[in-house]
Length: 116
Image (cartoon, rainbow, N blue to C red; front, side, top):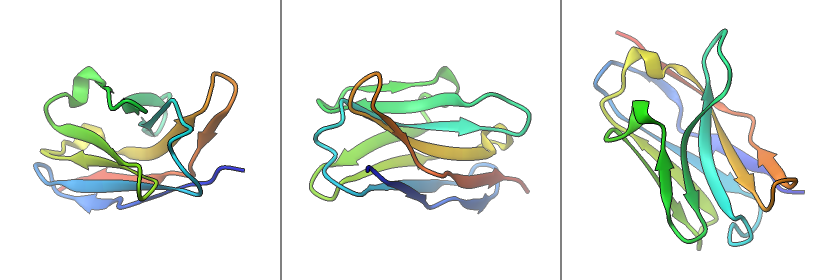
């Protein structure tokens, strides 16, 4: 069974930066894509950024130019560098990995709070 463990969340002031990490229990080479989603209180979970096995990336319009997703296949890690954070970025951030449409895995999430 695949396990994904997120880390790196916390409290940061507006304009600050955080780097989220997602550690996979095994090789990430088998995943067709990995990515980050977030869920704010009272809202649906939404896509933040994804990265394919070939390195192609996709971002939500709200984070383009501020967030960067990357992966380290040797370490079985996926990262989300978040810069110029805004209060509306406050949410629980989840790591997701997919081997197919039916084989999808989620982490338990890490809280990101942007507040002065």
